Image (cartoon, rainbow, N blue to C red; front, side, top):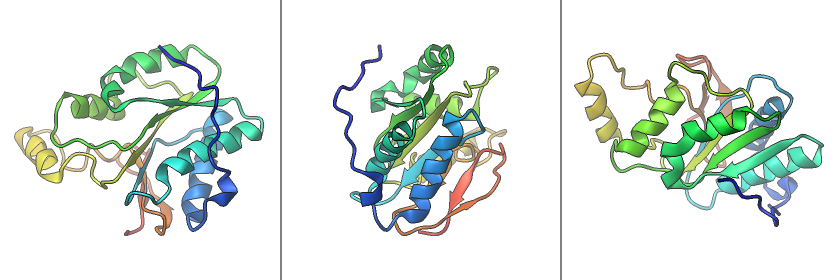
Length: 193
């Protein structure tokens, strides 16, 4: 069930300083989504307090202020398993959506992590073009590298980097974004943090 926020008042995008590259990339990606062009999923990772969540919220507000019909839908961490149902529900509307998963991390490759991985890597059906995931994390690797490597090693057909490839990423406030095509053609990678 979706509930509207009646007091959505993020900080003005212009007040977020020192993250110009990330701000511009996130804003442009959201603009592309809002006009129906190809857009990426995004992972913003970095230390606490670097403005990751504020950037997501402020960019959506800036796009709305520019007249774009785009909405931010915040998904609780325990809502990862319901993403496919949410995609189905939002696919039937003309509006564009950014699904926001804030401060996401998994200690092990549990069912929620597997559900997110499956959603990102895709199944038989494509995700709707009007919805993208924006995820923030204090970890560059959402799933502990040891757990991810163990899971990949136990499956002869999985490659170690496959789970991260579809997710667009951005480093902390001081990193610059560089675009590059991943295995799925949908990824962006950060410069070294």
